[in-house]
Length: 350
Image (tube, rainbow, N blue to C red; front, side, top):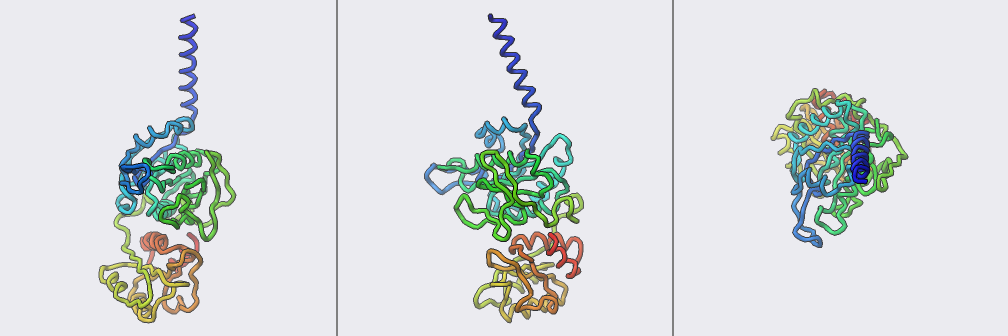
């Protein structure tokens, strides 16, 4: 009887090992953020981002190991307000190397939500692979009541291993929803449903690991992109964002030029409009070779040549990219060309 029990236990152990070996391998890269945050009290909104490392995150969600073999790495452990170009390059280079590994099915990246949309769009433009890359975060820290990080991470992993997630560019998974990196925008300071795609809608949903897609991203990304992390060098061209308001003067814009900005994104009012004084300064800067992109401080909609004749002034319109994403694309565009016609084409393609 004892021999039989030992044999049964051994058989179950071997079966478990075989099942684990048959699971897809996902690289999980941690950068910090609220999803890795910890607070003193479950009922308090106060917390510190980037307190938990990758090992603690995995230990807190043992069910992850039932759907994939996870290869965890810590890239950084910061609040995403401190995300910078150096970490972007480190992250993108590591992701590209992992994607080139035939053993890796996909990559999941934990990231703070404050700048997640910018990092996601950057990766969407510079990575070369059809494999899934998924960014995920949380709006409530791990110590909080109704913490959302565990389920978000489980769903992100489920998206990464799903065959249907291939060739969709970089994805963002939050609150049971799948977004294209280009379209994902943080819209609320505290709600767990903060991410929206205001111009085009989400491309799919994921409910406790069940993945459904309804749309396909059509703008150029990843394998169709002319930008590659393997060719880029840091620092990227300096591009600033100038936020407009009532009584706007050219002072801040001029300060940007004085700090040697190669390009400036204007978060204009309405359809990217600006005051007469700022418009004159923008025209003069454009004539000197600075690339000016008109975006809008409004949350959605395209910026078009309406009250401002962009061709006459030599400006670029941002299509429907918000200022922060327009900045990312302009930085990359300036590594290729200063030709404003070509840069305008990029904004219409990416």
